[in-house]
Image (cartoon, rainbow, N blue to C red; front, top):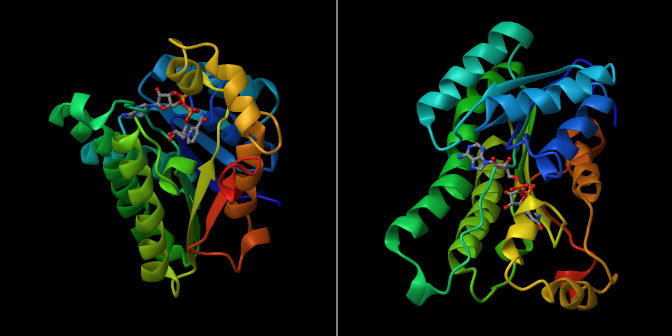
Length: 252
Ligand SMILES: NC(=O)c1ccc[n+]([C@@H]2O[C@H](COP(=O)([O-])OP(=O)(O)OC[C@H]3O[C@@H](n4cnc5c(N)ncnc54)[C@H](O)[C@@H]3O)[C@@H](O)[C@H]2O)c1
């Protein structure tokens, strides 16, 4: 899994405990020039500085992934400084967790915008340069909620299920162009998002661990390893795939 000479963009990479930062670190350690983007430029820059302190190549930019103009600006900067991305990891996301009767239309729309429309915008933005190079790997972070229904998470599941089939469809559109597109479906991974999700019910922590066949939540590195495989030439015959990294949760 050597990524020397490749440029990677990871969205939503500013959270120190998040999947995006773990992924950016893994890709950088494999030799990629990594761009970390997030809503907070300061936090993204702090994460990039941690990687640079390790002797890795990392830079940060502010980005709202729901903005088409924002994607154009970010890619213009990246292309000018390091060359266009060979690897895009659409990781940024939010979890709007409400039962349907309590979910306002604006909340539904926000969930779809941040988790699904952003993925389309990002893919659309990187495709021309990837097509011109005849190579690229796009990894879209979905969820186990994109594989099975989860009560109280219908909008989140709709967004992540959309990411799953969007990825497969795009994979078909790009299969002859040297561009691979896959989705990763994390199970329960202990990040800020997960802590927020169970903050009102800390007893859930033990119950969640007990519900996972491997007996524990996952770690951000578990996801980063899968993304790195899909980003790298080690997976050169893999496209349109969906990869659960969930300790067996959805195998039951
Ligand atoms: N943690 C889990 O258990 C889990 C499980 C399945 C899927 N996921 C998915 O993995 C991805 C990362 O999740 P995480 O747990 O690391 O979450 P996190 O909350 O720790 O990190 C998400 C990051 O996305 C950023 N972000 C949010 N909206 C954005 C926007 N509009 N533009 C740019 N950045 C934005 C946030 O600022 C944050 O840094 C998400 O897509 C999430 O849905 C997480």
